[in-house]
Length: 110
Image (tube, rainbow, N blue to C red):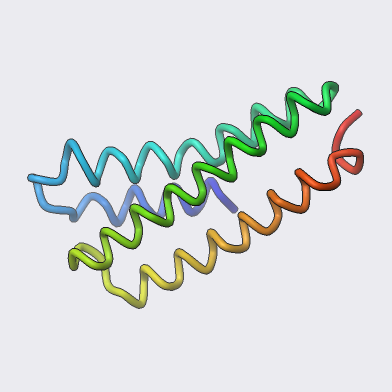
């Protein structure tokens, strides 16, 4: 799910103005890509509960950061508010799953 969201954001950000290249565009791409990357790292560290939870916490943080950048993109008129709302709702689902995993790591760790 988070990988597909990052790809959607990548596609949407292709249409951002050139002056946003080194600010909004790079920040939203970085944050959105960090979510699945941190989840992957957490999965590989599932032998160690604290490491697993730490990487999931990083993914949670990056998800929230992505939402902030989405809000900037929507408020600046770079994406439709309807699209911004939909993506924020999808990230809310990701956040919910991450919080659940963080609070119940024994279900996911070895």
